[in-house]
Structures are given as structure tokens and as C-alpha cells.
Image 1 (cartoon, rainbow, N blue to C red):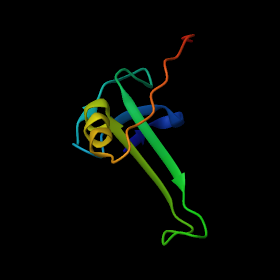
Image 2: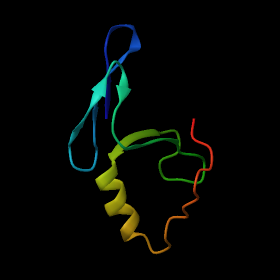
Image 3: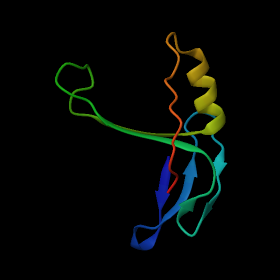
Image 4: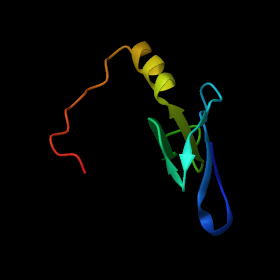
Length: 80
């Protein structure tokens, strides 16, 4: 969950999984975060809805470990 201040600057990010308030400095999240913004389509019971969620790294790891098929991990060879 995100909260923005005046001028659209990011002020707060709270993990939807555990409720942890993540570190945000000068509008930038300073720790591991997975953000999902998904617009559901015609073949879904949620057609017309857009869902937004944020997970801290620990909640992502917990969720990923529960999946029936493991997450594919690819090493990034060039960091920006």
C-alpha cells in the first residue's frame, strides 16, 4: 500500500502481507519490495478491477516458497 504526498512524491509504503512500514527516503524505497499493479480482464471474475499491492522481501519469499511450481530466477548480468 502506497501513500503519496504533495506533488505526487512517495511518502509511505506498507507491506500488504505483514503490515511492515518500509523505509522510504526522498521518495525512494530503500529496501526489497515487490509491487504488483494488475488490471483484470474479460475472463476473470474481477473484470474491470485494477489491483495494487506491495510485498516486503520476507513476505515475497514466504509466498514464493508456497508455490507449487518454483519461481524462475535469472541472474542479472548488468546492474543499472
